[in-house]
Length: 300
Image (cartoon, rainbow, N blue to C red; front, side, top):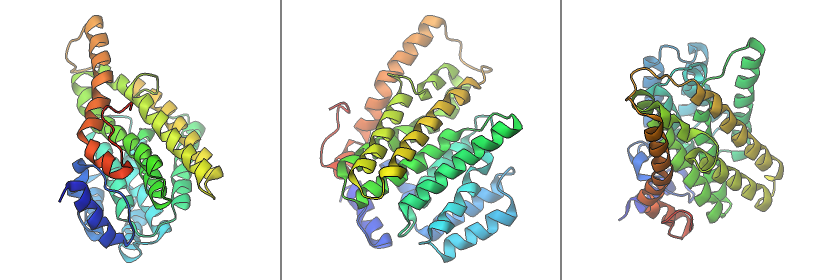
């Protein structure tokens, strides 16, 4: 049995409804049970010194175990994951892991209300931006919220039978998670490659932006009840992508490998062409399982 089939069977047995398989790179997390994810969140909370306050984190973890199908309990977990990352302005491995854990929590959630979940993620984004504007501070890496938004789009599109929209959102999710995970070692070795996250064509960050907006507007046009929230999500993805410009602009240059201007341009051009091909090519069987079409090369 293939990896996508195994993941789909596991998801059907856990949630009782057909959803798509997520990429093989997340099998170690997504194949575990919901309580195991709660334990991982507990370990996360104890290891992250600048984490969410205990008066919020402990009740949120408890509610996630007792009420796994509650959308409110799920939303309460997001501050636990994102508190350190959204307030930090330094590249670290933990923020990337918080994005992966958020996707896993969404995947293992039960019959959540996707519209309410999306509204909660949007409210969190606007709250962080509003607080930073009032205090005159620069926000943390808001791009870490985007995988959770894209994962919610994947779940919503699949539940509504929009396989094309689900595949598009999954493509954006795959590429976005890859960029977030690579962002930390890139900052330390070749900071110039942090430009790949920028939402300008033809960079991979623009592909994430374009695919995410396309999936959101597809739900807005094709599903009753998503007409307003779908447009809101499209605008939210665009806003987060604009904030990525600030995040990339804060990259450190210390400890980087020496690269001249010509070499930097060549590396950026090569990575821009190769990275999406590698991501979509490696996970092409998963995308084929979702949408029923092969996506190699991805522009087909």
